[in-house]
Amino acid sequence: MTDMLSQAMLALQSHGWLLLGAIGQAVFSSRFVLQWVYSERRGQSAIPMLFWYVSIIGAALLLGYAIHLRDPVFITAQSGGMLIYLRNLQLRRREARETAAEGSSC
Figure (tube, rainbow, N blue to C red):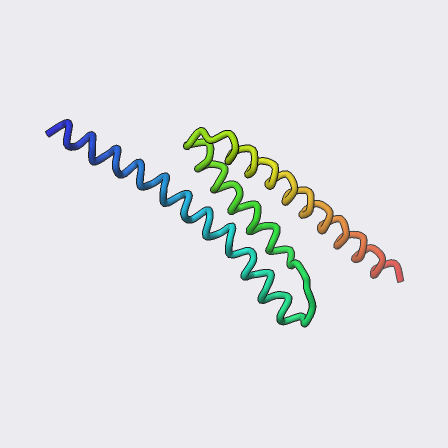
């Protein structure tokens, strides 16, 4: 009975990690749909701020999954991507602050 219970717990844990990976991939992939809809509404190619937030959340979930798998290629890819997404977010925030400052100085 104990062996059966431990097998059930292991299966649940395994499926939990798989679920985390699947959710992470879904979140990460949804950023392209978000960008597409945003661009269509604007009538030109554009990247909304939400794109970077969704990128960071998706990458963080996938990084957690990659760490669980102990996959160095997957870990490196998600870590590097996360740095780029964070930097882009920082640049966009700075741009927004500068634009607001220019607007208030007129």
